[in-house]
Length: 457
Image (cartoon, rainbow, N blue to C red; front, side, top):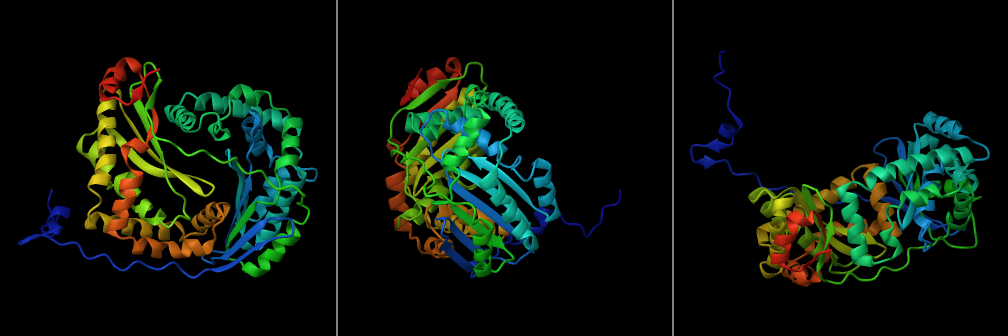
């Protein structure tokens, strides 16, 4: 085979006779584009946030309804409701709903968690009236036909039975119980046997009592006129009203530091490490500094935690730290899945990096790296209609608005090294964390007992 003499490898291209080619300086970050926004509360108590982003002739819809409940059966009923809300009304069956949405290039979907019932959708901008009409019909006249409830309930029972065998689901549920005891937020995944008992009458009663506009938030982003679309929403949803307000999740207790609990999973070849500590929400002046400190610790691929237990020691394929938001509060969550034989070693290094972040805070180079990453990621995530709608829906549910989103890159840019150091020292101290280790006690138990701070079953 003849090799082209002009061909150079990537390594050759990246070097000169004097050594490696220097990387070019990063350019200035783009600013968040000015947004045309209408933000108002309708007469029925629904907050509507409409934003013009005419990149393509479509519109994204996000409706978030506070959906808290204290009844032990609430999560099971809520899951069945979410699965069957769009399966038919008095005037449209499932096929008619799907057909009308298809004709406008649209779709609607639902998901529920302990805090919200969320309805997401999209359509061509010209089809927004139809999208709103179908949504209004479901909100005010969902039928929850016996056959539809039975069909979706059976499917849900099967999916839950499979989900509860998954290590990630087991670890998440154990972490929630460790953090919050018997608080309703721990019932993110209902029990299959509870779902099997849900009747159509249960779902209809829950809809009437909880699917309410007052306190809910509707976000629309796309090729729309924000002021005009508010009137469209008012007309389209005029039949959705109630004197009562939607039910928020009851306040979460603060997470306190303490021992990790070992959750037995005999025969498993991997362990799941899940650590958590109380943090602060987006409205706190220290949030931007904490966000950057979290990135430096484990929030992106070049973080200290990933560099240590993945790149250097090979204990895991992936490790990360992130925020769990609930209302205007937040917690830090650190997670990694490791081979059973290195579980204790991985936990040791995870704790070491927590302590090191406070005692040896990020350098100027680390700070600039995480700052660029945070600002760039935010700009990328909001560059599309889909991303902007989802971001605004999450913020609006916490009482924030588009202005917070537009000004957050400036807050990130203003964070100093001293503020990062203070956030690291205050929020990443190992003693602030609690959590769980899910694994085979016969394999991981001895190492964890030597390490300490882990309570065996």
